[in-house]
Image 1: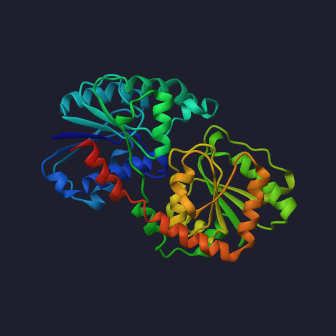
Image 2 (image 1 turned 90 degrees about the vertical axis):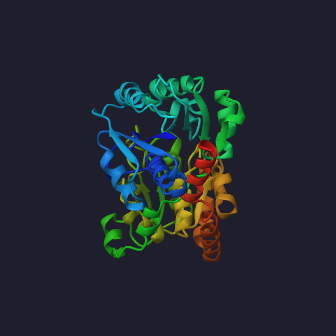
Image 3 (image 1 turned 180 degrees about the vertical axis):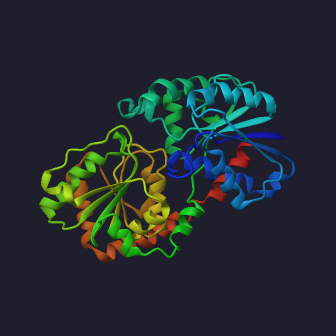
Length: 377
């Protein structure tokens, strides 16, 4: 069987986050399955700036025999999706195409599947970007009606129910496949980087809590900042709040003048530094209003960081009994729960152990094996 795997969502050699990481890890681990490789040929479609990274990462984990790589000649996302992808797929003439992003071509003459992480564009339309509103959302609505659309992969039972509800897709076409924790992230904890230098670089001090997420409305960073203000004023927390994540489409927050020195925005940081910040933090806070899965949640748990988490969307499904939950709209409750965990060392140790155990359930090898069984057998 001739199989096309689309990785055009990956555009940077550095700063791989979220959906890009999912695409890269999914394709890498599919190609690591030697039994599956024997009777199939693979064609990897890449963006203009992403091919080198995709090839390099796949070469790290498996041989490249029988794999062909194609690179879009132009960086523009819409051109790549709607002109180059149909053109190159037509040339390949595959038996099956798997899209790891929402940039589905309107022209699809071959059987295909795709992954949908969530339905935030329908549930919380005020929190999405213009690109999602005017491009990806309409394209997705057309793709799921395409007669060549075979199956939809999603990342939680919560997201499956949301897709059925908001996109009116028959649930028999939707398959849940949990995500995993990348080897790159896990190995980053073993590197001999000076912890003190990293903490000094980001000006964290010795006492801090940490959050991770692109600066966009549904991540609820504004709510966390308000809870942090309460934590400082009502509970006399003496430490800092570290917020890791690249800019989305909100770049400023309302912060009281006397707190600005205690709230640090790091921007995107590499895994090696992130793992040091996580393992040095007193707790990881995940206040998001809406997540299809929530990769930072399991990454933090894998390092044994106590996790306090929103009780919305998929997060209780993924976090299980390893997290302490709060209503993300209730800033008083968020602050109170954070203070309670920070003050109870025994509780933090228990959460650390439970988190590590829970994180062991989520691996990319499990994800890829299920992908193969769902889509290609």
